[in-house]
Image (cartoon, rainbow, N blue to C red; front, side, top):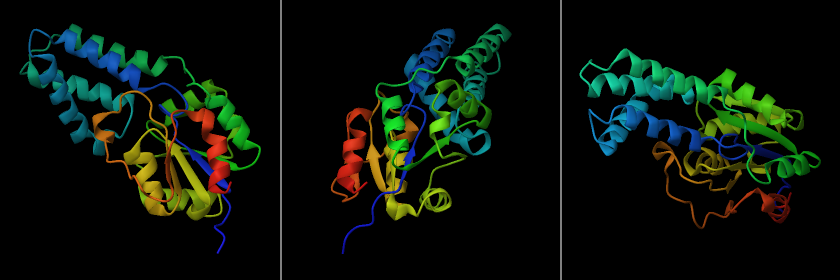
Length: 235
């Protein structure tokens, strides 16, 4: 039996289409420098990661939750003695991340423009609603997407629902992203293709084992080869 043709392509946003994690890393370095008199960098980073893990359910993903987790960690490691000036700097760092210009990754525009001519393309991203909407507007890519879904989390049922709403079902869709945990594995579990595009360092809470050998999984070094891969998948 011939496999159904691909009709719909989902794209992650942060660190798939534009730079993101690098700004978190730079801000985290600033955080550890500000608190260097209170704890070693490795300890601070571990405590911050613990706070982020605790707070995802309350604050969700994105800069605002990260900023609140930095402030919470600063209060904890200083036993409540963190200077107000440090809190002010952390708030300023978070605001600077929200205001940072969008920097498209190599080949992102070409890949989106090319596939928009032949497929339904859908942006499927986690994070703060206002921030993601602002980044999409600044990217110049918004008009190429047939739909945009800013979701609280990415699970198999998320992809099943989105690809049914904006396409012809998960079995005729592919999801493209830099996170195995959020973009690839749950899309595969929903019945879609999962295309992994690594981009620098991955946030520890997004780490997952590669689904090597899965018939609908592929990895490419960057988005330059995406159109050719979609064609080989039956798109």
